[in-house]
Length: 456
Image 1 (tube, rainbow, N blue to C red):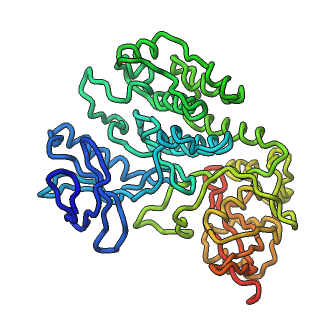
Image 2: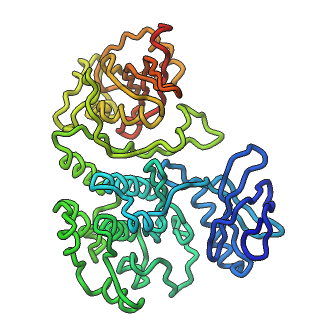
């Protein structure tokens, strides 16, 4: 088998056996196999003609930047290094699907709900990136991957800027012209607001199918970025809701200070629009992407099932009423416990935090327990201030006697009854408990435990 010019496959780079050439430009990407653990991976190798000192430094900086990120909606980098024969390389998770550019051209982004799902996952990934003090600087459809199950992955941190570190020479401009912010074009000091601007243009393209900024030359593109207002006509023609059009316009403001301040408000606005769009329907929003626990840390929870879909979907209500209406603002919250001690500021903050509603719980179960067919409540939410230790929580939950004590604690459990579909089509009744913990004012999914109802 042959791969890129001058390389016969299979070939070896460290412990990775290259099996198929997937493509590339300055760097070539191969489907490969980790010969130690048998995992299928993608290996990106800097080509011989691109191994000048600056390009090599930028390539390894990309590997370090991406390798230190751990989020459900960001491509995972497992390893990187420099091979004596082939030069610098990085090892990433192997993805199947297509990039957002191809999905838009092929009409594979779904209806408005599907597009909002994609946009929300991208925004959540970028929200996490900014918490890590990283500016991506090259947000565009080609750097967004969509898996077969609808899971979005942000890719390519090749020109990202970390903290005060930048590998761009003075006077050089890095980025893709169509998505560059005015301050990027002018060569000014950059902040995370350039990614907000690019996201606005990407959202425009996702919703309309056309680029927000056009031009036959780089000069024309830059002139329009700097001087011409964004033409919102295509959004009206595509039937984009006014609230979404307004969000695009704010993100793509030429004045960086007029854009939303980071991605937290962007995520909140998309979530609000999604709920309003689905008023009266049963809505499941994509689960907020979590920062994954790195190797070497204490691992709590189960592995994400590959191919799990984080998708906005309308699911018919189960006969027992297990799926709640999407109108989350009016959902009743379990009563707060009467205070028995003087409350700290942290406790008061936790008390004001809504518990995870059942729509979110259903979405988490479907993501982490792939064979589930039906989901029903079995008991109310149970709260505790015990340390969020999964083993202790499971031992407590074996009594199957949930009791709500309010939302001022750090650990939360929901008891459910599941229909577990077997490979042959048979559905086995299961009982389960879903575990959450309060982190930074948000309920974060930790784990799910199930057991056959027949054995209880």
